[in-house]
Length: 201
Image 1 (cartoon, rainbow, N blue to C red):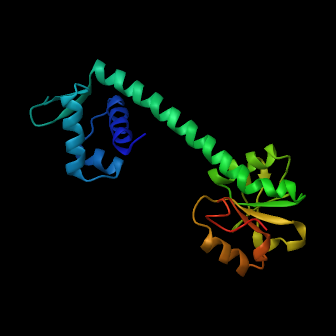
Image 2: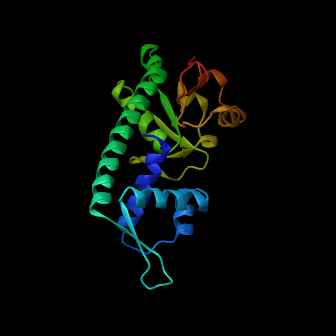
Image 3: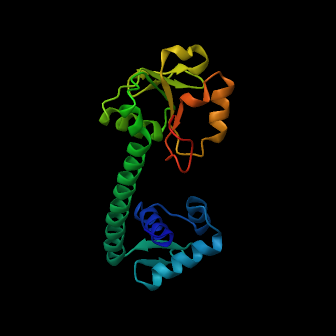
């Protein structure tokens, strides 16, 4: 789904909430310039997806038309297809990155992170027949999918065979921080494929 269609969907979803919205608020919500928000609204009005009214005379109100509701539904469905495809691609990338752990016989895996990437990594590890023995982050004291999360500094390296760094961001800075905490570089596995990140070792 191209960025323009995603922005149009976001505008239609916002207008469907039936709360008054200004162009400025819409621009801030979309993270775009005010002039660009104005351009999108004019384009949607030209297509017949929204109606612009001035009631009271000094206030502009944007209303979704029946054609706009149909377009919102179509774009929502397209976005869902796009998201599912991205999810499937992300899962395959994770299988490629984490698959060698199962083949190499590494059983004691520590999962570092508690965000969406960690959830995907956890699902992939389970799919590969691997169950993390530790859930870690930089602070500890939280829970992740019902498991207690410990601070990395409170765990000794002999409690796990490797540490999966569960982030989709470039891992360089976090890998350096982990190494500074005593994690051996060869025991860190990133979620990025070997060509783009560190190799699984």
